[in-house]
Amino acid sequence: MRLFLTPLYRACGALAACFMVSLAVLIFIQAAGRWLGIAVPGTADYAGYCMAAASFLALAYTLGAGEHIRVTLFLQRLPETKRRYAELWCYLAGCFLSGYFAYFSVKMVRVSYEINDISQGPDATPLWIPQLGMAIGTTVLFLCFVDHFIAALRDGDHTGEEEPEHADAGGGLG
Image (tube, rainbow, N blue to C red; front, side, top):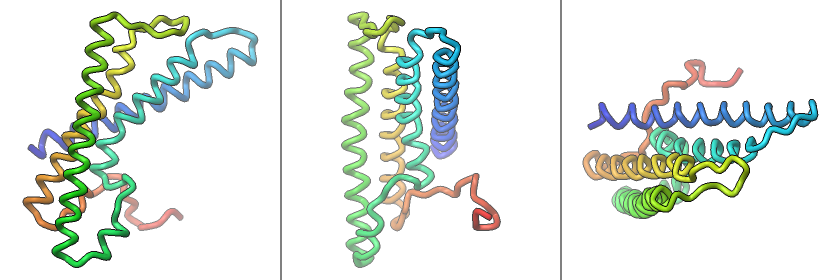
């Protein structure tokens, strides 16, 4: 299963990075258009779609890399046995909340598609298209929480952190 999930988390992270680059390009186009006196309609809407997609698609990657804000300050003060149960409870709560969010995100995409909901802006984009980023991101986040919960059950003391590929060998910034 690890052979499938880790590349999935990384692919979502890479896709989120692509949306961030697209967001920067759209903002640049909008700024250049204003400077040149050329109206570029729809760029603000698409920039918003890119920002939302980047945010949601990056969730599972950052959780897998151990970069989410965590309750470590609280957990490290607990005795070993209570720490394990508290960590399991946190992962279980994450499974529940992300699963709930994923379910309704996917449902929102389906309903938007069925009723042919379009954006209010001049672009008239079918809303199910930009909503896909949120639905995919929350679904993969749910899978990541379930994966971490199972690993914590199996391994005992599981922090949820994988070895980052981008780690600096020198251990510092300078």
